[in-house]
Image 1: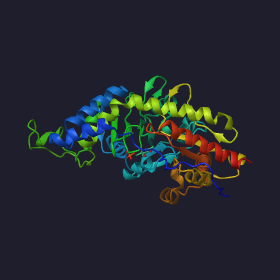
Image 2: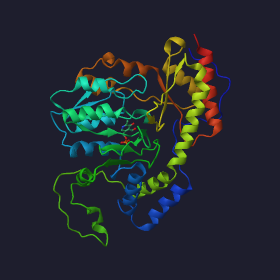
Image 3: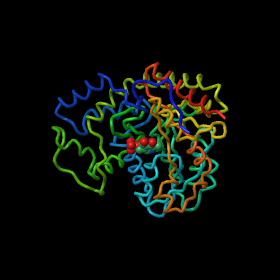
Image 4: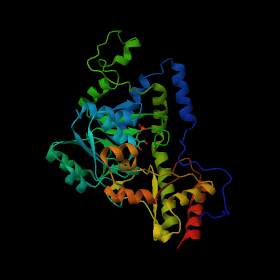
Length: 393
Ligand SMILES: Cc1ncc(COP(=O)(O)O)c(C=O)c1O
């Protein structure tokens, strides 16, 4: 039951465009002119500055968050027969990597407010085959890590955190990525820090020494320097590794983005506050995202959930109505157990994870990007309010 639309923006507002400025362009051009365009000095500098920014002891730049998760699983020795507990409400990459190493994903449902993995459900799912827990900091809101950390300590489990959305987030005053667990970040085009494609693995120096080798063909350390004055042609392959390294072109983007990250985050928070204020009186129609008092949210996504019984339209119609008003939006995520590969392999029923499934059917990610002008924010607010107004029960 789509409606005629009166007020409409002239141009389509994309859901999450990157904030690329002259600084990024200058830094990339500098790399192109330098004669060194693959992994090199800028990648090294990006790793050091990133680690300093989040308080990690060290960091390894890779070509995606998926690569970081895969590498971390291999270095942690997760393999066939092992069970890894994770959330259904994530991007497929978090779970695909478990299939890549032959481990079995064990999905448990999320908490209704944050949509993060529920520590009590994790505890209930631990078996003698459980080797690791893979929490995902959904939308940039940190997972409740303390109880998960306690479970891991009690049962001798590895924790590998998917922080694709969580740069820069704080849990109980601690930066996500600073605690010593292997933590994977994403710099995909839509992320809070974007290098087109890219990722970072934060972990202890010992873990990263092995990850560095595994992520570059299994070649002996510093092999990337073999074409440099300092390097030698000789290297040894001690393990059949991957080709997951970051290039200096990506690192150039990363360095420029890192330098302005605080400013970009301020803008995200400003937009989130505007949305929160403008939708506060719609609480009986729209469920707004939360920020628990113990955390600082990275606000990668702004996910609202419609109260289906208080509106005459469903989620998909709401998204179509936004589009008619030239507002882009998205859904994060189709839960893992709904995708045909996982549904068929593990014989999942949609209702196996009722909070994830119910939330999925009601959720819409509204545009959130530091690039949005005040007028863009006002247009989103007006569109959402208009849709709710026209379709209230
Ligand atoms: C939760 C989550 N994990 C992992 C990834 C994979 O990131 P990348 O594209 O950098 O491999 C994404 C990407 O969107 C994601 O949303």
